[in-house]
Amino acid sequence: MKNLVLDHSFTPSSLKKINQDLLALFAKEDPEESEFLQLATKRDECIQEYLSEIDDEIKQDFVKAEIEVNGLLVAGANELFKASLNQLSGLVRGRKAVEKYK
Figure 1 (cartoon, one colour):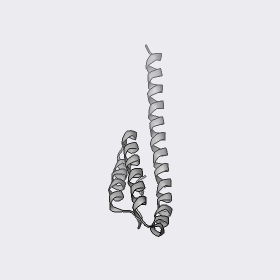
Figure 2: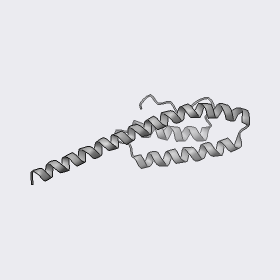
Figure 3: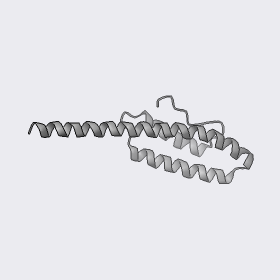
Figure 4: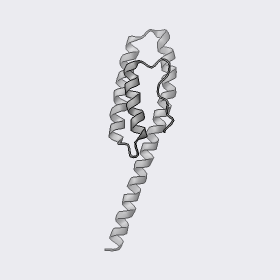
């Protein structure tokens, strides 16, 4: 997820800051899922507020651009989930190995 682009020509400055935080999170070696959830929730609230403030013309363009970004975020969330699952599987295997040698 290193080449992730979350901003588009309709991204307001308030959303750009949240997007930067998300990019920084994805760049970490072992990102925290709880931090992702917090940022995704904050991002959704920001978008909902922005949508209530803009004209219908801009709204359509913004929503189209955000649908693409949303797909990228879903892919990022899936990567975090898979990484967590792999980590958990490794812990379970390690625990079984320890039990075997007791």
